[in-house]
Length: 100
Image (cartoon, rainbow, N blue to C red; front, side):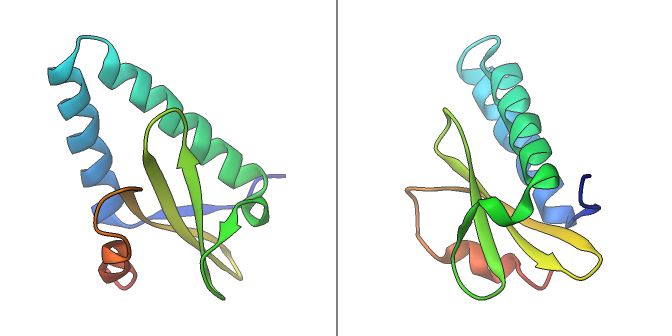
């Protein structure tokens, strides 16, 4: 059984922007990122509690092999996907996206 998922608008915009940046860098790389992102989202939906907790409410799932993480929180009615963030840049700055 998969958990219902809700994506905050910033997540969607970030995903499109990052995919395009990878595609501009090398043809096909954007599609590889999109595939890895979709695979990670599906994994979260299937087993949202299996990824690393950051605090009481927030978890992060890595988008392998890319250095990005999907930050999300578990709620009673499903999963809220808050942000897509580079794992090695400005740690903690994704937190401003929690309430958007």
